[in-house]
Image 1 (cartoon, helix red, strand yellow):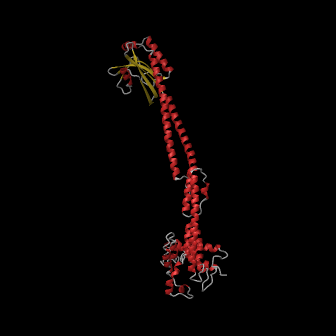
Image 2 (cartoon, helix red, strand yellow):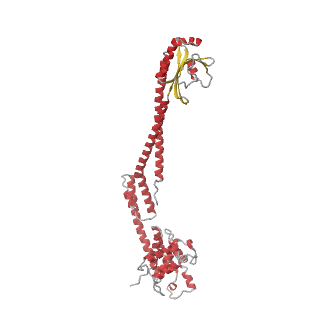
Image 3 (tube, helix red, strand yellow):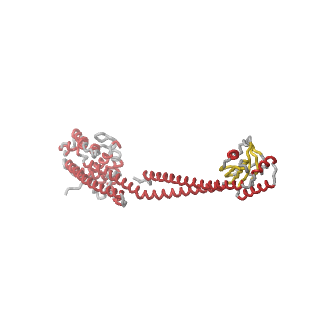
Amino acid sequence: MKQKRFSTITKKIILYIVLADIILCSIVFATSYFSFNRQFREQYDSSIQEICSAAREFLNPDDFANYRLTCEKDQAYENVNKMLQNIVDRFDLNMIYVSAVDAPDYTHIFYFYDPTGKNFKYKPYPLGHEEDYRQKDYNASTKRVFEEGATIVRHTFKTRSGSHITAQLPVYDSNGKIVAVIGAQKSIQQFVNARRAFVRFVIITALIFAAGFVILFTGYFDIRFIKPILLITNETNRFATYNGEPSEKLLSIKNRDELGTLANSVYQMEAAISNSIDVLTRITTETAEALASAIDAKDKYTHGHSTRVAEYSKKIARMAGKNEKECRDIFLAALLHDVGKIGVPNNIINKQGKLTDKEYEVIQTHPVIGRQILANITQTPHISDGAFYHHERYDGSGYPKGLTGNEIPDIGRIIAVADAYDAMTSKRSYRDPLPQDVVRSEIEKGLGSQFDPEYGKIMLQLIDEDKDYKMCEKPEI
């Protein structure tokens, strides 16, 4: 049997390893990702808050009430505005603004600087510009900072202006009242790109590690465990079908562990069983040969007939591709194919002249008698088939059942060819052994009628290989 490249157990182990790698890599990836994300966010959060806090120090909150009333800029306003612009340029901010929120939900702009002009429709917002808070594009966090004094940091990703972080802090006047909100926005696209690169790096590294680990571990496990286990299993299954001797391959397993011990124990067990089977086989064969000799002794012209038929049958079976156990069973069945003649009177078996119809009917009962005798051998039930079917003919004109073609068991079709061949190559009371070319011609003419064409052709091949005509009854010396 052809061994699969990967056994079922190997595939399962590979699957478990891959799943374990996926879980491990997922844990490593998640841990690294969140650690990386937290580190950068903390860095950006702290940075943007510090910028807002620093910018807040340049403001003059006590002047905001006057700015709201007049909407006119003075020198102090211009100085602060310039300082805020410098902060934006220095820290590469998207924008910076200072605003207040009035009821009913209107925002009042004090300062606004957007160097790119991409974030809002005004460039820049004029002093005193008011924006409806309820408009959907306005940030509600401004009102929350203004009313509650909260410090808010938000992260916004995948907007038209890119990914950015925004911080908003309350602005207090000298009396401790919140009079405005200062906000700053900074691009974090660099962080997003770095995170994407980090994710790709972790995934690729994890895949390479997982693939390498699977290949190395699977290769080691396959060599160290799977192949020895498969070898022990295959050799045990082979031996269980009585297919040869104990395999020396088992001794090639040099593992210094339980597998090595198991392989050696299996080899020793197979050797002991093989020896016992050999002994039993010899006893069985010798017993069958003794019984066959007793049967052949009833007819002085069939001495050695059963043994020769058994040898020819075994050769045909082996060339037909039968395994050793099947060949052994066919050999034993052929040895005992005429055992039913025990029930046929000697005067009929040894009659010199032509048999009468009644005597021929008695002769035709020997397959049935043989089957009855051998039916009690339960360990090799096919032996009785050889005795019962060896006089069936391929075209259905045989006896006792008149079966045709493949209705006749293999063992009967094989013995039928061997039996006919020995009958033609043995001495009879009325003739000497037939010449080899005549025997070959008769076998060839019987293909498809008396004999199974497959087994008949094998017999012809054996005849052609027997150049010296050794496959025949040897003359007595």
